[in-house]
Length: 166
Image (cartoon, rainbow, N blue to C red):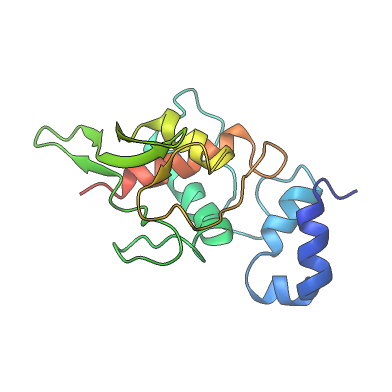
């Protein structure tokens, strides 16, 4: 019935009542059943099935996923917690286009400058140690495999991060 050992671990450590009190019951329900929108809920944890995966329509689902999986380590107000803040990844150009910011990362033991884009974010979500932001090399993060966050959910997270551009 359960699709990932992380859910079992969370339930064993925290108990289902604690998860529900934290508002994570919809996440557990999403993992255990194919329901995209918990019954009676106005929020959803997966984006609507649209053609354009970078659509701003995915941002509300991405925010819910951020709150469930990322907010304990990544701030979205420019502050430093355990991991780098997520609201400084993109910026809006005068014409309204959104572009990625430059970041210093360590990849394969060497420092490099990259421009944040969807591929970098996807890689960071799936394999957090592949390219680590300078200053965060000693911090641990979870690798979110496809069982935990499928491609639509990763797309929603990225759309939400893009929506934070200033």
